[in-house]
Length: 218
View 1 (tube, rainbow, N blue to C red):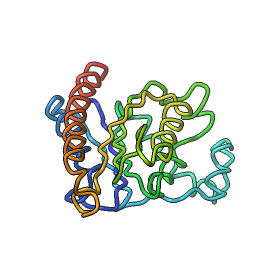
View 2: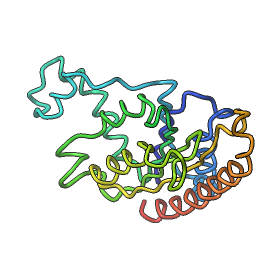
View 3: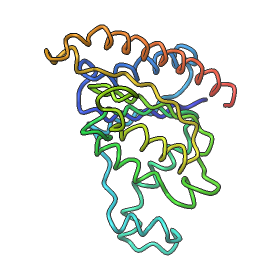
């Protein structure tokens, strides 16, 4: 049975979150194509993971048999999150832009699952695994826009998932999501709608395609 690991990090509910809405389109397409598939959903806004502390960090570089009681307790959550990532056939990540970067809850999850010598660098245990990132943002940060160069979401996540973990990274970018709620952005509503429709179409196609791929590999 193929497994999709779905990570949400938006603090908003589905009704007010572009990343959650597009991720839901992906999930539905994945399940419609592979109804017997399994989805593991981690909502980091509802159930945040622990931030890395010294014990959890040091435990990652020590043989588990030699862990102190403190290290063993601190590493238990990291082990669970890492094994969850390793067991997934595909990964879906909702990553809204908050203050030019990712939510702190998502950064905490990343710090837990990135483990040198296991998931990261060298013979990474998650290398080649497909990860789809829904990188929503209230404005626009592409070439030619006033905020060109200030997108620290895609560059960061491409570096983490692609370079460090060796995963196959694909971005879906719903932008200008502030237009429906900010009167100053009213003239950008047509561009927002086009971006929203494009994102949902991409999510449906990507979800269906990865469900087929995961089912064939399972």
